Image (cartoon, rainbow, N blue to C red; front, side, top):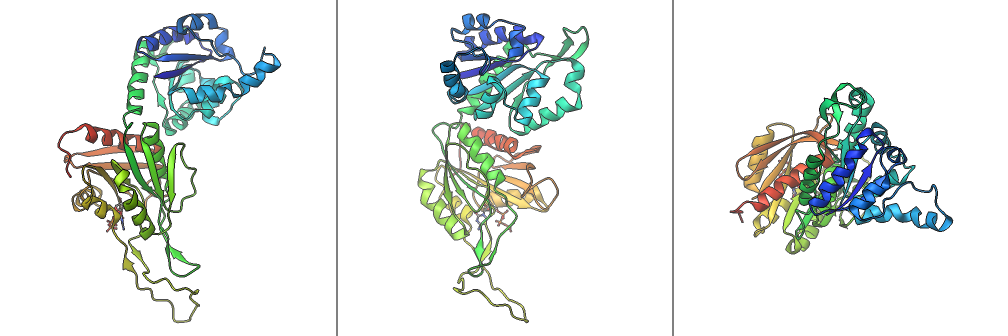
Amino acid sequence: MRVALGVGGGIAAYKAAELARALLDRGATVQVIMTDAALEFVTPLTFAALTGRKVITSLFSNRGADEVLSSAVEHIHVAQDNDALLVAPATADLLAKFAHGLAGDFLTTTYLAFTGRVILAPAMNTNMWLHAATQANLDVLRGRGHTVIEPETGLLACGTSGPGRLAEPGRIADEVVRLLMARHGLAGETVLLTAGPTQEALDPVRYISNRSSGKMGYALAEAAALRGARVILVSGPANLPVPAGVELVRVKTALEMRDAVMGRLEEATIVIKAAAVADYHLREVPAEKTKKTASGWMLSLEPTPDILAEVGRNKGDRLLVGFAAETQNLEAEGRRKLEAKNCDMVVANLVGQEGTGFESDSNAVTLVMRTGANVAVPRGSKRVIAERILDQVMTLRQAPGRTS
Ligand code: CTP
């Protein structure tokens, strides 16, 4: 467990020394990064003595030309070399900078370059904590999948009482360990994921498709890779960046997706079918563009192969997760699809409403489990929903008696 510990400039900065100690006690290596403001409260020597490592301070100040050159890329190394970026105390100023992507010093540049687990332990005056600006920044940061360890309520250094006191260092360290263990929970697994819509040609210039953006599948790919899985992402046309460490297989049609999935099934231990596959297509696509006629255009569409059902029939001891996009009867339809397609879990989501489903950044879903349970996941960003789906995948993985 390698933790980069960012220390912000607040009175609670002295508690970060105790936190570093608690992390070391739990077997972590700790690389401390201090902001300029933190230097006003504690000295780097304290942390250097505790961790046995050089403490990183500001990005460019007080350095010679050679040092500036090496430090210009050092934040990239720190970002790559650590499993978690823990910021404690996370001041209101740091939360705002992270939320808006400001990158003026070592800690904020490291944050932007970091792809692992980000954990924020805020501490500040109660009114600053409760201020709408701080809460809005926290919403943004939670929406990115970061963990916020809420401050405790008590007497603060400013003499007032209320929420704002840094969580107890032992509690923060325990949470970091728990999250990092979860992060490695899919090591050794190969996750075969599908995402996005498919496009079914009607002629050389036209196609039919659906409203899927691919965001849910890409969020799952990113989250699974961060948990240590090898990820093969079979994606229909989607205009999204490929998450780091994910192998992308691009397809267009349902038939191409079917071939890609069945061709890679042998490698997979977990299959997650988030794609919105077209149910119908034109079997014979005309070679020439169809000309406009006054009488209209009758199309005779035929069903595409149901990829999820085919994987279900050939699943062996793989774990199979399907999706159900519904406009009504969410749970009943989810369970019907779970049984019909031999899934272990169906992620049932309501589509066709504002703020949920296909094109939205957020979602609210019900996880219909083969154990008989229905797990409601409240509205959250697709990244947060992805984490909850993978939590349940890992629970099923650990449960005895998988169906095959
Ligand atoms: N699916 C698939 N192949 C298809 C159609 C759907 O693999 N040709 C998968 C989707 O990836 C999803 C699940 O089946 O994981 C359910 O998709 P959905 O469109 O909700 O259900 P359908 O089975 O198509 O049923 P209906 O459209 O009648 O609700």
